[in-house]
Amino acid sequence: MTTNCYSNDIKGVQDFCNQGRLLYINSAKLGAGWRAVPHTHSCAELFFILSGNGQFRVGEEYYPVASGDLVIVNSQVVHTETSLNTSAMEYIVLGVE
Image (tube, rainbow, N blue to C red; front, side, top):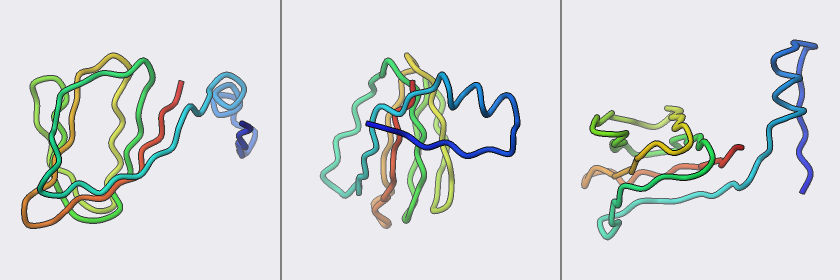
C-alpha cells in the first residue's frame, strides 16, 4: 500500500508523512441493530461523520456528534460510537499508526 502526503513544506507535516502510516479506511452506517461495544485499538482512529448524528463514548465521557464533525481517538483509548434512533449515523474511519 502506498500513501500520498501533500504539504507546504511545513516540517511537522513532513515528519508525519515520513513516519505515519495509514493502516485502514472503512465506512459504516449505524442503524437500529448496531451493538455499541466499548473497545480499543493499537492505532489512532479518525472518524469523519458523513451524515446523521449520534454520540461517541470516549472513556467514561459521552460526546454528541453530527454531520461534518471529525473525531480523533488516540490508540489504546476505550471508545464506542452510537447512532441516535431518529437519524442513522454514517462515517468514514481511518486507522493511523
